[in-house]
Image (tube, rainbow, N blue to C red; front, side):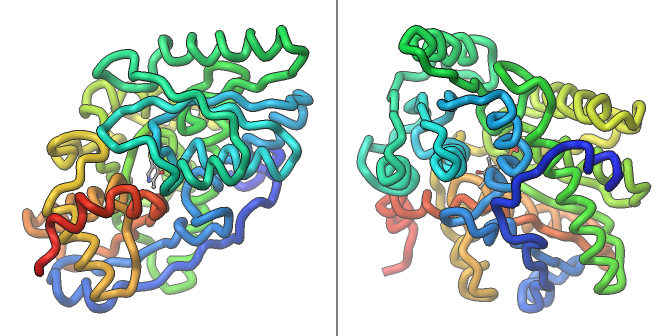
Length: 349
Ligand SMILES: *Cc1c(COP(=O)(O)O)cnc(C)c1O
């Protein structure tokens, strides 16, 4: 698998490997499987996160196509949009970000929006196109319109989908998910050095491309590891279709043949609760638990929701007590600050 990945150019944007350690206190306290954490929140670009790992594979394609502008879309406080802007700016590519007001946060210079502004990104703030997922063709069509306008001004835009996930727009290979094939191999090398192969990897899933990459990595390496994606946005059914679609594209890109079956895709959607980005008491409690017991800060939109799921799965005996699992911290911590008042509502006096 490593050789197959080497065919895809990678620009070293982040610190690799990201750190891994056992969560000693939480393993004891939750009384289930051994819980390890992989710190993809410590990638070293801005405040870190999975998007910077994906951009290591996407940026070379922008440069190969001689793009001078990148056009993408996402939610207002998007980690993907901010990391795209940071990576692009570093290589002299102008970021144009179409940001949709997906949940009711004020438009203020805070969190990722502040970082976008500090990076000098061109922000186009829009109303969402509908209640559904932002991974659809309508959103691509808006980005293509913006790209056409930029082309008319003599620029060379590169259009990439939200999360660097789907093979649409200018990106013709599933480059974002290939980064997570590599991340799985990295995880396996780390756990093997600690003397084990994890039964499970648990992570927050939004567009499906991190999950698809991890699954292709696990299957391609012949590992027994099952990948559990805890959805923060979309329901299981359409989501599984996206994960399969991206996995197929990754299999084709790597030339592995068909190695992923539908049974390999575990998506849990019951922890979306009130909806994408909605902060609740259980989310706040999960942030407090992990921060006080382990000194690690989770974010309210993605990783805390995934942790709520993990705690519930442990309570429901989804895992064997002898299992070892790796929770991937995918980043997102800038979202704490624009959500400060909502989080504070759930704090004890
Ligand atoms: C985008 C994101 C995810 C989900 O990654 P996908 O590849 O889109 O599924 C998880 N956590 C954080 C913090 C993110 O920003």
